[in-house]
Amino acid sequence: MQKSFDLIFVSSNDHKYLEAKNILESFGIKLGFLKSDLEEIQSSSLEEIALRKAKDAFSKFKKPVITEDDGLFINSLGGFPGPYSSYVFKTIGNDGVLNLLRNNRKAKFVSIITYCDKTILQSFNAKLDGIISKSQKGKGWGYDPIFIPKNSKKTFAEMDDKNKLSHRYKALKKFSNWYLHK
Ligand code: IMP
Image (cartoon, protein in one colour):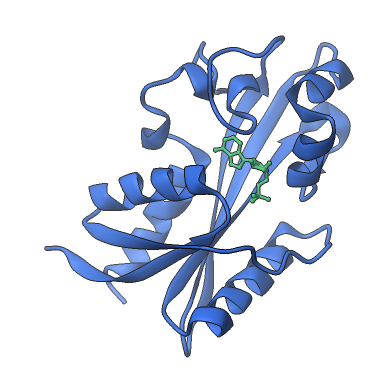
């Protein structure tokens, strides 16, 4: 049975919303969208950034909201860019990241989906292991052209089924299990 229509995704990123909408629809949840820049504190903890962002979204719109924070953590760079992924993408971009890497290309994508309403503030974390490709492949947004999930030969940007296995999918699945039973 479909639930809600009163859950809003607050983000400045259309790509994230479109993927989240598609994923949540597969679990029977309709997702609205409010495009907005939210408070993004500077912190080495993605969790801390996520909680502050969701609180900011709820205080702005006074409706049950979800927000998302992601990070690309590269093993050979000690987890960098992690919480600084957005800044690194804007400054050195995918080519800059590729230039930093040699043999060890292991990485993980982390997603934190945070729900906030009048009484509840709760986060759902997921990670997806993978590797960084040697060159950009496929047309996609953000780090999609350089991230190859484990057990795949294709980058996210080359895949048709990213939404069935991504870090976002995994975090939203955890969220849905909770949301549909709360
Ligand atoms: P933030 O949560 O928007 O700060 O995301 C951090 C960085 O990771 C941004 O540059 C996003 O564009 C990028 N990013 C987050 N999720 C994905 C994804 O699914 N594919 C590609 N890049 C992503």
